[in-house]
Length: 121
Image: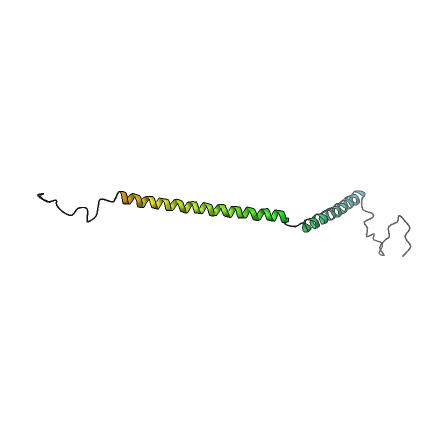
C-alpha cells in the first residue's frame, strides 16, 4: 500500500473506496448531516438521563409534609366516621323516645273485648 499524503483518502485494496468517495456531493452532505444529528441526539440524551437518575424521589422536607398531610387526612376521615355514628345513634334514640311517647294502639291488650253493658258485640 502506498503512503497516504495529507488530504487524500486511503483506498481499499480492491480499489473500492469504503468512505463513499465518488458519491454525489448531495449524498455526502446528507450522510454527514444524519451522522451529526445522531451524535447530537445521543450526546444530549445521556446527561439528561444521568441527571434524573441522581435526583432523589422526594426530599426529606417533602416527605415530612406528605406524612403530615396523610395524618391530617386520616384524622378527618375518623372525625367524619364518628360524626356519622353519632348521627345514627341520635336517630335511634329519637325513634325509641317517639315509640315510648306514642305507643301503638294495636295489640291484644288494647281491645279486651266488648265493654260492659254493650249489646251485640
